[in-house]
Length: 195
Image 1 (cartoon, rainbow, N blue to C red):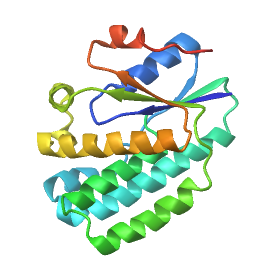
Image 2: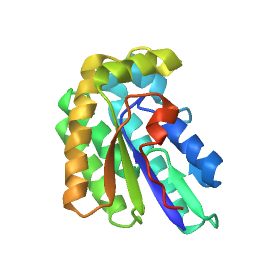
Image 3: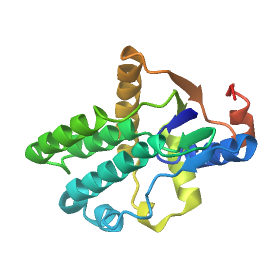
Image 4: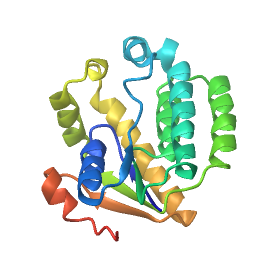
């Protein structure tokens, strides 16, 4: 079974890419549990109060979804966000002062433990574009919980995404960076999926 991870910042187009893979190759798609996170709306209103619990909820959810690799019988499985990206969001929360040092160290212990026991995807596609485009796409999709999204936040996320990309490459992950600044159909033509 082929396992594909889609890696990229908020608003880059991961869900659209996953839907295309599902339609074209009949892969199963595991979507990021954004709407299910009961803390997210409160996080955007008061990030200092809710950042740690919001991030821990995402970490556990992403770990549970990655464990599905072992249970699906489909020919292909697509994750519209990888487990590894969770650390990008924790790093960003910590840098912005929303997660304190003690909570961040506790988070890292959980992350390290979980990442040591999950299977990595066969291939990860890093969808990348500039943060102005990301903010425009976030505003266009108009999710209530994202109305407070700022360019500063997206800039910080992007900084940590680029660092994590380099780290995963150095650890011999099969990860490919793709410019995802165009329209969905145009972007998909840049990807060579070996079915």
